[in-house]
Image: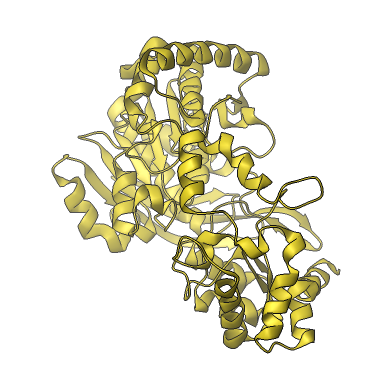
Length: 484
């Protein structure tokens, strides 16, 4: 969309504020009319629910989310309609000109998400939106949504993600996300934040930020689910809505929907106090019921039952997915947390659960997932194969390379890593490449996987078990899953 790296130089808040000023974005109106959604999982669904309620209430409603499934335009909508191609091109040109002028003057490089956020603010302002819902990108403290200055925000959930940026503990990650809320505002915390409550209350105390927690101040009860939808009862602040209906599936949507309702109620109470309660309840019911959020536990086929979900998955989400699946599942490119404590890696409990369902874990050759040392070796990778085999047997492990273009005919071994130069920006890319070569040297392209086979053979693996590693285990799963 923008010819910019994924991340700009350093912290973006000052230069982004200057960009909004140059574009004549009314910051006071932006704050007055907006809510912000942060969290590790559930941000998109929560934002969609909240925007749906605003739309059902009769407000001209803007929604900013990411990523998109099919078209870039999906990220910016007004009353459910995607931004048009002409408007997108016009605003893009205007923002690129403003960014070029600021960068020339300051010497700082903008990131693509900053530019997109500015575009959304400008489009919502031109569309005269009365209510706007912004989904954060990463965290909250230094994310562009911090500049909204919202007085009603949420943290849908907290999990280990982007730890290099947000911190290596749940307390640090939750604190970062909490900072999207302006002083004097209110933050709604999802169910899995309950264990962090003492920390979060103290963290927010001297900013005069109120903390609300789902299943504490925000009541959920009477949950029920079917193949076509879910129902639940909701209570907060004198409102009691019975048997609210939604078509989005998954038990986590009770959390997301209740947060969305509370966000809207908090915003409405501040922006339009004294509104008719009957009208509010009607909007909540219609808004939740009518939301469709493709790619989130979406049933795309009934026979055989086929579900697509493209959201993040944490520890409990992984175990839940394994439990409810009727057929084997795959952990596609990860490693063993017992050997390398990376947030992306899987615990022994997760691997055992996978094996009980006949699934396969695909072990990755990516340095960061293999060992805690800057340069992992083939032996480090083979240790992961040994660990899985000793834990659950050789029938449940394979190679999950995490390659897309590297190593194939006509490509250099590190071609995929080179393609990340534009995504990360030159300075960050060089720093990352200097610290961590992307793939283990002995297996830095798929043509070198024979070194895995020879390494396992030297460790005493049987030939038929090595064949399983090299593809037969994955073939078994594919046959089991795809057969009618």
